[in-house]
Image (tube, one colour):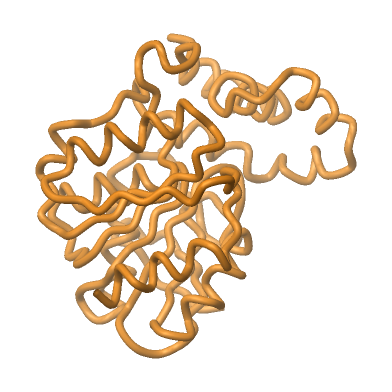
Length: 258
């Protein structure tokens, strides 16, 4: 495990593997960097891969009060560590970070996006208007289980019976330590709409990839691609949201080396 210190003094943990051009892996959801270990290992055959814990996750710090600006300072510090510029792969909610970072002008030279969960009107039930505030209220009261439940039901749109089964499993409470990041991610997502103006501001080449198994996420992928200046668009038919690294890495590699 390696560590950098972000602008506000927060330690950010990361793993570095491989050699070649720098690629930063940006994850989402209530998981740490280990969720992308297999993908990072495969990418490391062609690149120097930086797989990091976003603040509040894993071995990274969580300096209060939270601000979305700190997420981009963390990424900027990691890009500096990587040599001053890097390519980025944003998966799921991590794609929101990658998009905004590129729009802010961080030195991201190529951008790959997997199933960024924006919500188009009519594509699925809307995220409840009070979702963010409910997450912060639950965080203040230490109700981490409620935070997870709201995330899986309202944001991820998992069936209630599936979430009930998760709650009965031994791993449910194991997710509690990272539940606070769900409030932070709600800040980043805002109203979950596609940020057309921010996407239009991105000058780096980009590829938008989906698996065509979740229609509302595929609709978001189409909207993201439509808003970017000149993107590539790929569909890996049959891939779930938890995409198989062996399936997506060749697509990312081809794009990053093209």
